[in-house]
Image (cartoon, rainbow, N blue to C red; front, side, top):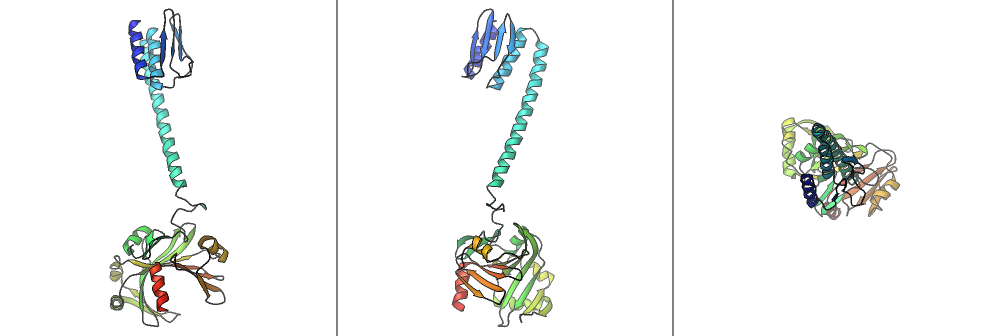
Length: 302
């Protein structure tokens, strides 16, 4: 009996919430701060009542109670069974906790309309006057290869020459699922006029467009070589065609300026946000993103 009392007293040192009171004939062990007993002993028999806040102490007390009655084999089996049961409970609690954490992280990465952050056309981050981020692309910093890794294989790369003789190099990502819309992305690549003129010697097709410009398709080898070029501007054309003026005002605010292109199309310009939008009541909208510094240069040239 003194051995059991010593063990109980040792347990009391490791847990302030445990309160042991062993007397002759009748004993009780109270492990809870509330004062209600967890185990009772009357004439040498122990009965489990309330569950102790400290599970380990509770299990040990149960083992001691069985040992006092002489059921050693029962004690060992009971310990193994209850230990396995508690491990299963602990595993379930861990899994539940991880799921809850994942849900919380997901909740705080979506906006109020349920779209993933940075995937909608109005979610624009201005780092400085030369670097604007949209759809995870930082203009004048992200390379074509990096965009390729994010969005997948390109449909192709084409070289344009305007009626004024200026060249542009464009990469087409085709139709992508971005946010709530399916859309086409077109990246305008950074290159000097001399570099672009030299590329006309490495093309497989030349056509005249309806707008009067000339379009060349680069051969496969030259397309692969353009991966290190930085993306200068980005055009976004959603398949959804009901993005009207009210929708634009709700997500972009009032434009700094706008102009009438034709009977069905208006051009809304947001130079400080780095975007201009063609709103077409009879067709698809077009969003063109560029750094504010480029907007300034365009205004100066006009």
